Structure formats: structure tokens, C-alpha cells
Length: 106
Image (cartoon, rainbow, N blue to C red; front, side):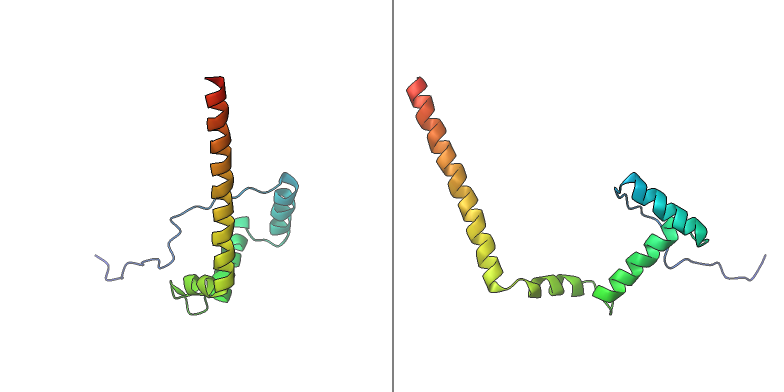
């Protein structure tokens, strides 16, 4: 038996990401990757790692959530609530109109 330790991959690639892009973009990307002697998967993984490092430099799981929450000001939250209330009111108006037309039809 060998005394060699078994290797354990830390960044095991065990998940997939499916994206939709236009055929011309895909073909151009693949062609550029081929010309640069790299793979599309390698370049996309590199982009993702760079993006994560840029947005979440300390690689803290909650850092991104905190960043997103701090961007939402009290004003934007109020605007979002108001927009949702307006949608509810529009739906209620439609429901009342439908009920009225049903009564007339009956």
C-alpha cells in the first residue's frame, strides 16, 4: 500500500449554471475562447470568481445581503410599499366592476 495522502478537491465542480444567450454571441464567445486557447467554462468560472471577490471581498456569506439591504433606503422601501398598495387598489377596483357586471347579468 502507498503512504500517499489522498487528494481532496476544495473547489469541486458539482453544480451547473444554465444561461440563455443569443446564438451569435455564443458563437463569437466560443471562437474567442478557442483563439485564446481556453474554454468557455473556464472563462465564465473566472468571471464569477472575480465578481464574487469584487462584491464580497472577504467572502462573508451575509456580506452581499447586508450590501443589498443598505442600498434600500427608507424612501425606496416606502415607494415599494406604495406601488404594491396601488396594485392592490387596482385589483380591488376590477373585482368591484366584475361583481357589478355579474349582478346586472343575473
